[in-house]
Image (cartoon, rainbow, N blue to C red):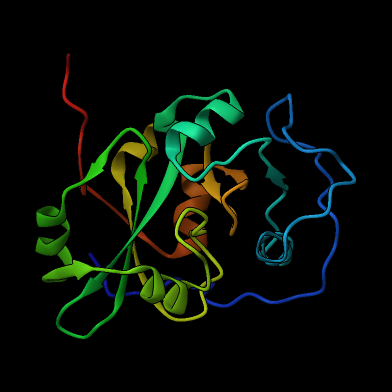
Amino acid sequence: MNIDRPSQFSSASGVGRDADGAGGHPPTPVEPATRLPDSAQRVADLLLRIGHGKPVVLLPASGRTSAEAAAGLGCSVAEIAKSIVFRRLSDDAAVMIIASGANRVDELKVAALVGPLGKADAAFVRQRTGYAIGGVCPVGHCGQTLVLVDQDLLHFDRIWAAAGHPHAVFELTPGELLAMTGATAAEVAISPASP
């Protein structure tokens, strides 16, 4: 398993354009003429360039947490692909775990795959990914990022990921997520405790 491969789409730039609001899962939580925030527009432009057919959409309220995003989209929390960034201690590399919103990341499992980890503060996350915490997109990073995907996301036909802004998300399949990021699917999470 090659887990030192960075995301193949590690930089994003482009000319601004409006989100079309079409496609996806009705009702689409964005008005067709709504202008996207710059960071979300950067993601929309990248998705267009790589041929991803689903638009970036704006949630009516914050999607900073998985629960907020799921409520805004009308999907389960488990269908939210949340991005958690760590700092690998051996080389200061950014390690992104894209986990199901219903799961907590097991740092020991991740460390067993990539080496010892430390916490990534807000400045590190922004510097390495180009995004603020709460809107970290799986693609379009300004630096190389090692990406692992929670294997629990592979059980869904459709998932939603942050699109560079706390109110912006985009729809994709787990297969598209793996292809876009060049990530490896792995057991990286602790499933929620049963009641």
